[in-house]
Image: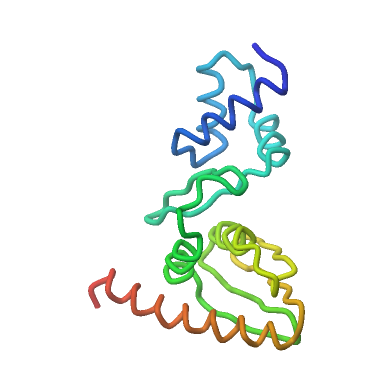
Length: 164
């Protein structure tokens, strides 16, 4: 059933309404709707639609649409994610390297990008590392200071959640 445009519309609707955390779940859901798809096709669709996979905590993730399905206050969500999953921040010149728990870098980079801050040129995320490119060394220093504050808050949050 359906062509690529119909499949993309279906994916957007599924992601908007449901908590889909893996490509396998999305493949299964599309098949329920009558689309004959493979994981490889869904992987390409995810990239073409610009979907991001963000961490929900406790090992759960969710695909979200670009600039959509973010909490009302993206900065508050960034603070929460940063606090729970960022392990270290380092700076060299106008570049920042943010180390995260495994599997959480892309979700945090996505939130940084959605903030559309002028001092951030862009981000690049791997599995557990984010490269943040700042416009200037001064901007990078200010971001490093801000991130360090979030890291301190995050450590307190992690201690509170773990009960220690």
